[in-house]
Image 1 (cartoon, rainbow, N blue to C red):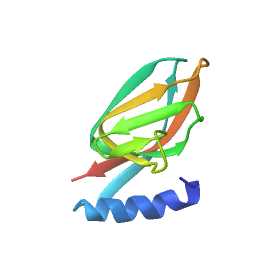
Image 2 (cartoon, helix red, strand yellow):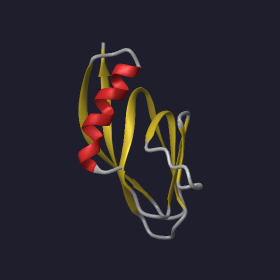
Image 3 (cartoon, rainbow, N blue to C red):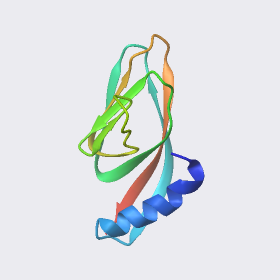
Length: 99
C-alpha cells in the first residue's frame, strides 16, 4: 500500500469497526529465509507497507502474495512466510485500537 494512503485508510477502517480512537506505530518483522513467523493481532490491525516478493501473508482478513487479489490489512493470527532463501524484513503500520 502506498504510504501516503495509509492514514486515510486506517481512519476509515477504524470507524467501520465501530471505534474512533487509535494510535499508529511502525513495526518491522524479520523473517528468515524459508521460514514462517506469526504475529498475534487480535486487538490490533497490521497494514502492510512494504515486503519483498518472496513474502506471503495470511490472516483472518485474507492473503497477500498468493494471487491477484492482495489484502494489505491483517488481523487475528498473522502468518508471514518467506519463500526465499535470504532473510528479509516486512514493514507494517500497526494500528492499536483504543476503547
